[in-house]
Length: 426
Image (cartoon, rainbow, N blue to C red; front, side, top):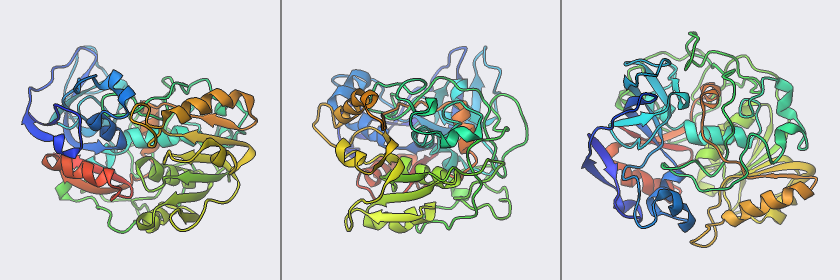
């Protein structure tokens, strides 16, 4: 099979196309023929082997797993003897192993049937970034709650503590390991369908209601985005959208919004774009921070106010701050929080080669128990209930690349050329 591989750590030039053996599956695994694969910051960490501490998982001297990739969307090719949720021919999306290839293995509980309203590339970019944003925003689906009121829970409520379903150990994410941002135990599949999603029920189907996400009107598509087309290799892309449901809209039967004041720093990236979309859908008042070139795209995601950090300072007082940029001190961020506000940190992109800024996460977790404010650095592995909740929004896909141009896709991501998400197509 065709696959993108790398044999050493380095920049995007280490990625190349190669012929690799088709993976074999265990009794509790699913083999997916990949139609599209997500590209995220975690893939960059796995490619470069940075920060160095991440090589404990990636491989000390060279990559332990030659094929990168975590997020995927495709068609089930085969199922293990113990798998009952899926069958060959099912269209699915979720997280797998080594997804930058024609075939990839996946665990059933990390897959979901793909709704017809999502193309394969749109679905492929959802899992890691979308689930991370869900958990960072403290939305009920991410916390395994079915109570709408828990969305607006105060920072000292059980849903926003530093311990519990969110693991306190910070790490660096990548295609070969969990993302640097949140994870909890498997939550009940009391999750979501959005406009245009299938009505069938059962394991792996996004059929129940998402609580805590308010419906939103159509939001303009950001400039330069890649609309679904036949080039996406998606057999379902010809499905007609429901009237009034745009690529950034949220549908479904959801509770009223919470009205929190939310600041999203790094709103032009993958996690940030999902955070703005989800917070807006939840009824929060969103202030988004990004660079000049991404202002219009971020405004299109639904932010009430967009701050260009190259031109103006961060101001205001917020109930919740989601910081994905990773280059501001805890004291600066806490100064923008209300007295009992919540700070959610995703990874660290600044700092030395060894820790890469993750020491900020460790500090946040160590001091949080002694503060009125709550500081979190959660770790996420997308599960089925997260995926189902995320089908109620159209993913912020901005551009697709064919598999053989993976190095170009990674370069565009690493240099900040993309506002939103990037996918590889096969």
